[in-house]
Length: 303
Ligand code: SAH
Image (cartoon, rainbow, N blue to C red; front, top):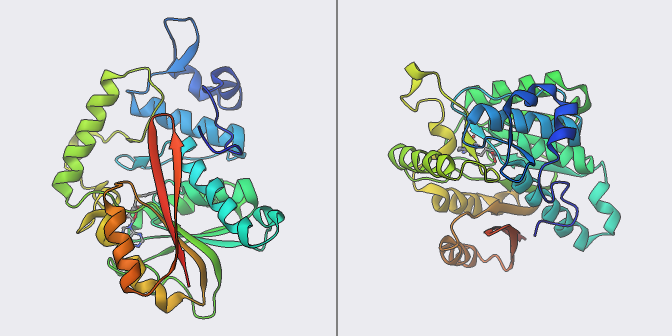
């Protein structure tokens, strides 16, 4: 079950999506039961589906990502935003979830800018995205510039230190109600490559299943994996990334309300709790999110 406020429940309304984004039409296929879907094994089809979902539900009239960059499954990304809204609402009145004065920070926003888009369009929050990857920052800026609804509400900043999370991107005296993060997952470029090949194979096998994330197609010449490496891996994988976030967070205790990050490997939770404990952080929560058979979670802490 997805979060009750998640707009993406049940199967995709393909016909309505085609109306909002006619380009999608060329990717529509008929299921054995006669219903319509798209071919999830085709990265260009998944990208068109995302553009259609963003146009239809979020009034984002232009969205694109460069070849080789992550094409996020929108329903799952939306869940994180809605559970985050619940977390913020616990401390204040329920109306806090739509307070325009809420400012959020998305660490590693990617070329797709997905969390700032969903967060701003769902709740009016002002969002700042960060990334170390120049091409991602450029792509995010292209999306912002092409969508007047995001003007002055969503912006991005480049993190120039690969290993820093908040330093250099959070300005002195700036305050954020929360930060969120979908950390680089794999421990090495090699592992990322293997993981992504596996995913493509699985997707091809389950052709008509609802999508999970795929990577936008690379032109054949570029199959050296260069473009997407930053997105999928960092030294030490997500565990090291989140530990770095925990260690840096104390310094920003007065500037960021809730620190949160997705944890895609459940086994990593134990070590993260240990790290939080070592830092003397006692206000810690794990929020479980389930999408179909897939269960994910984010960890949240504050001072
Ligand atoms: N938020 C997007 C992309 C997640 S991939 C989504 O959910 O689809 C992880 C991102 O983190 C990549 O874009 C990568 O370039 C970025 N990244 C890696 N190290 C970083 C750092 N120290 N600070 C900010 N972003 C970083």
